[in-house]
Image 1 (cartoon, one colour):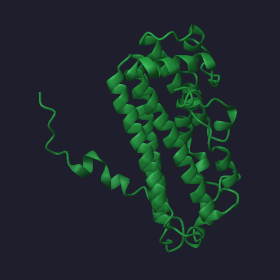
Image 2: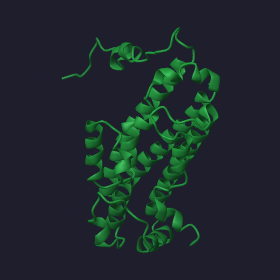
Image 3: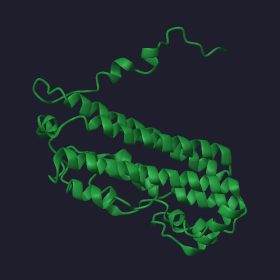
Length: 263
């Protein structure tokens, strides 16, 4: 039986009519630049949704020992992060005066409240109460589900074990609710992997690409906020630039950075 639907169109498949109704400026007029602000942030949320989809897929392929499928997904994730960075260039075309023409309408809403980005952080291994305490109960519950499972790094350790590397059992069956901490035993294994297992080493380098890409996005985000509002408090009650700057240069995969001087 054919799945062909003659009534299906580009517009209906992508729900274009509904999509274009989701941008609802609140300012009087409305202010010209508010639409850009909305479109950019809605686009970020779509990319966060896709990132979660790719991360979960990569975890499955890693745990199955499928190197090439994992490489493809991890490479896609890095490219999406590059796109997230490039969107900052568009947002920075808006001057502080243009942003402040509608900023007051945002009330307490803020990117600080993005549940999806917190979910991405959870997949990457963040495990602390501060990451979700300010979010609605349903968002907190979703993040709690993620933190009960393996992080991307835990899935990578499972992959390395499946490849025959002697990852200690205490890492493979640890409490996933607790944040992973860099470990010299794992670093020794990673050095061996890089010198003796080129395919696994490629996986590690893809992860480092993602780590670097996330740090790049954080940096550009900090500078964009500083450029736009200086050191004012964030609309969501955060310290604004101060909070964002505190997230810089915190690697997601510290073991991969720790071994750079051992080759």
